[in-house]
Image 1 (cartoon, rainbow, N blue to C red):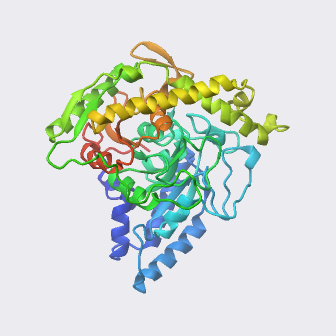
Image 2: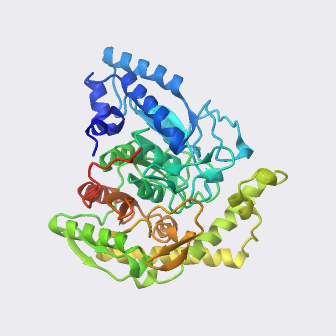
Length: 472
């Protein structure tokens, strides 16, 4: 533990920074400059940033400080810097989508999520790195290069929101906006030791996000070092915008069945049986989190999920290929030589047949029904996020408990909740023997983000991540 880092401005939570700025204990300019100074030291090693908005951020900070002096009405993020995954449109700022095909592309309008953070008083500081078209689990592309994990630079930061996760973990940003189609906020958050929420599908508008394909499964969500900050980000982002056809839930919508008056919260936990193989240290963390919840008064039991003893990645990839291949080909035809190997491989893949695509959709409905049944008995599912800690860069195969698994296996415990649209929270919890972060995942019934955010706040960093900082 480094006490100097613990007290540093750049390692304070967004909620704390907002309070300090509001009470004039810190100025917004001081906060923004502290993060810019941290970026100068750390980003050359991590490579999380694709576009830095330093001058605009400092100007915005001065405006924020004047608003406080004038006693203007202040938003919950007033004067606090935030960062943005480069899949999000940003007015007047490059949104290059991890691709040479979009080098220098500048939108004329902010994505809904970005506009909402700004309206809450947040100051946009940087755009962060992704794989090309946000299409892989490692944030690497031919335009802006590869992001490294700040806990071990030889390890991946994950994807597709790897740049954002590494940025926040290493103190370059207090809070950010990411997105998730199969793993993309929760997995990188777990690899980097931060928190992230994939809310119920449609809770947060997808408007202004690229790609527009697969919007039935994409989720925009907040990322931060603490559950409290994730909850703050979610409170700002949620609610319909009148554009996204899936964003139809009222901002305060709740599930009719999530009423806990007079009874304890019912938690089922599972690891290998549903998502195996899972590294033994990760399973141990999930079991420890279960015991912690039991000690806190929840009804907790290990469960068996027979419906998860199937290959759920295949239907996901059928849907992914069915939508993403023709979508990507529209932009890539004639420019194939400019593509990263992952996107090049995607557009060269044969399209699934109509029968295969329809069958995959039917399997998704089957999975939704199975989880609806589970949540008749339980309020929360506790499980792993990733089945292993951050692997080395470009690792095609990973050994898990001595068993070789494909790199695709990393999505086994996250993609089911994109296909079903269930809310899922990645909670930083423990630390591995290799000195890498381990997170646990909390899943609740549709529209019941409040329960997993409450439990996540009780669990975060209880298994050995307290006061640890990346060694950079």
